[in-house]
Length: 101
View 1: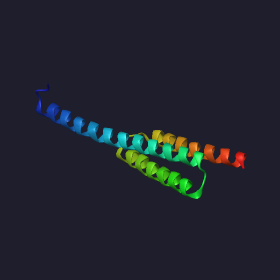
View 2: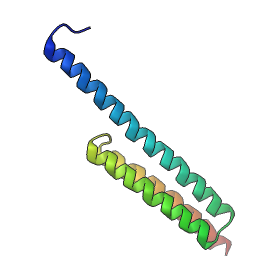
View 3: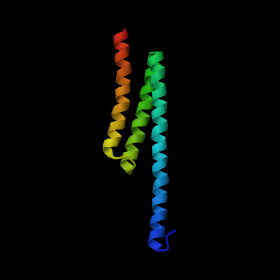
View 4: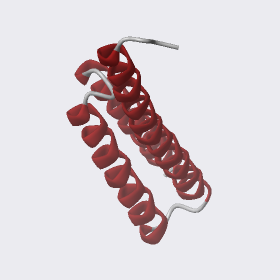
């Protein structure tokens, strides 16, 4: 345990930041999973309601990723990479639908 007052304060700050970062990362992971589940539902039953649900989940995930980048939880390139991968998954499902039609 630190003895110096400034070191004690730095420990408190780093713990606070760690918990904040953990919260944002957890939220991003949860929303990503919800989006992928909605995308699977759209792949199984391709209609306008499942597409709207997938797009809504994508929008929510994008928003949370952007907030995490803004707070410094993720580097901006890491946030962009995550968003690109989510978009790529939707495009792949839409491409399969176009081929099947």
